[in-house]
Length: 326
Image 1 (cartoon, rainbow, N blue to C red):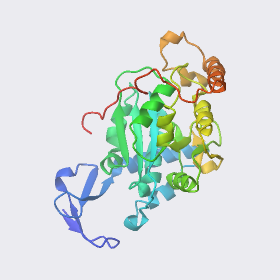
Image 2 (tube, rainbow, N blue to C red; image 1 turned 60 degrees about the horizontal axis):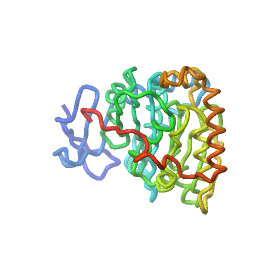
Image 3 (cartoon, rainbow, N blue to C red; image 1 turned 180 degrees about the horizontal axis):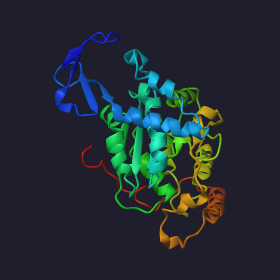
């Protein structure tokens, strides 16, 4: 068994960190003692990304797999990027494994070169379809290198505003970006986000097709100031549009809608799928009615200059924690 080797793109040799290595995961350190991990090789993540790319391309969605794999090839050390702004991609999901497994592996590879300043936070909102198992088993390399952080809430009914607030509250990065679990971010998406904030924008919306309205980026301090998504509403509909309008209403706000197709792709949903995990207390109200009701209610609140929401609540979102084993 090879215990060490000298990678031609690295100034120092790598050492096999045997205690951390498993059947489908190889860990390398630069000190021979496992204290300074330099890379993780994981067949599971790459295999999942290849499977996801084939599925997406069969449905005329761009996967850009070759570009994603470039970050794992020769020159990985020099390809790592740097930024003065840190970016969090915030994902909340419940029983959408059929979409998450076709989006997240590619998103992880597309963000891999930027892992020094980018984090992907995924909150499993009480799924029963083995979402957590998928994250822990198939995305382990991204967890180990610090790019991916996963959390669970335990059993919960789906409420978009509550779930999204939860995924944003675990982030500590400068910029928080809502990324629905069915979204494909595309190559170098975080770089584009950071550049536009460096140019002076304070709110971005990457909308280029169905399912991408919620791709909203803002400064974390602004998100906290307005207390996130409004939770006093039906569990689905209009919460993204309302958040954008409130962020735009802040003093000195600078809004930009980005319609670049590579950054605005989503796996389609039906309206029935959008509400299937909501609480039965809503009596089976359809998405269209929820959306209309929420729009009217949010419009009233904005017209009343209620930019800050959830004032009566001690906090936003629900408690979540890192699952056992992570």
